[in-house]
Image (cartoon, rainbow, N blue to C red):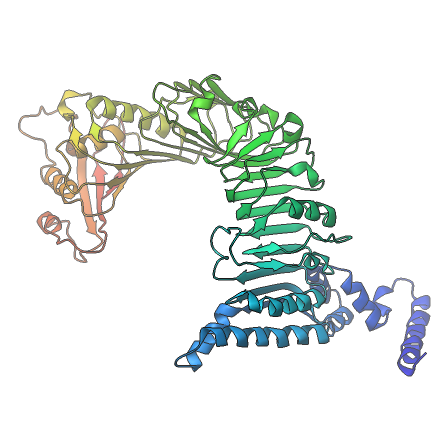
Length: 599
């Protein structure tokens, strides 16, 4: 026993003697400092840092404990600094100097036994000759004490940001990197694992591969070496396998496939009782079984993914614990089922997009019966019936090319805050279209506190005459907001009258140089008193109800309320103008309405 150990032993004996007199004291805090450091080594770095607030003793222990939260070794940042100091830099020389810099920096981390929470290494090499130096850097990385999160990106002339072919030059990361002590998260970019060696055990829980190469041996080695993996993410990876069964990862909770290249045709989720989240944006077939759906809480399937069997997704009852779902389904697949149904107690967010590639194919019914659903967004499909029984619904969104059938709310949501309809690709606006829009806006205004109608369309033909239709008497909709994005500078006559007659919007917004729209508004406001050819009690023309108005323009700074001509003559500019018409509606026997029209 050396002198330092004897001194530490005497201090410990004195502390234990004091502790024996007062059992209520904190015994752990009396341990020697090097023992407390060993305790901190066993904790995640975040928890070790939090211990500094326990007491003055622990604050002193943490201040003497060697740790750093993040080390970022990026060749791009190093190159920028080199460019500032050198007039004509040599790229190969900068890359060589960066590798020397990283070598020294990593060596210091190993020598000082500094514990690092996250280490990011981004290296660019000119050719495969430099791979031996990168191997040395990776070896030093594995020796850095207790790295919990590791990001590796080795960029070559062929790999890094695109699909990797077999004859490309790309770096192969040694599989031994998985054996790093304490490693919990690994992010690999633009590489491939080098050998088929198997690591006895790895603490890795999160594996993310981006623009990487995956073959059958890699999958086998990962499953053998990393039994604790809970999260798998593949982003634009090149797969040299046809089928990937997620059941080989027994503890997997989250799987994500974002784009893919080459041969991966099937992703199979079979008898996987621990999987909680599945996301696929890849051009693959995702095969499920009822036993593999029982634990899923988050399900995201994009338009590129296909699913099998389809009946599991036509009725979401097969996902009893589902809380969030984003489904994009081809309409031809639903034609035989006729009905899409979701009746989940836990479901809170639902995004449903039904793609229509063939005419004559139509889903007949959408039935949503979810007591805890708070958000529902529906795209396309043009169903015949929409039934919604969601008393907790807060947001209801619809996106399509046609005005949808009026939804039937079996129980009126008490907290519906936001209703949003986006209608696009419309060219011809008929009188029937404006009548349907009016019915939709009236129903939605009664249900929600805020109703937003978005028109992103081409206007070629408008067939609307306000005096031929019903009176505009019930100005009850003080919560309707109209957003207009037109693809033409010139609009036909009747478009403005049709929109205001059908929506009676509280707020309407149009962006861009729509001089015709502004000009017609100004003309109607200038003659807001009743026309001579109208009866005194006529209320079919919306401008008869305007008592006062204010006008603002985002380009013109002066007040244009009293000079509408200057507003119409505003010159075109590169800025997208926004003109606001604040309209004060007349008080009548039906309602005391005040409206804001922003154009």
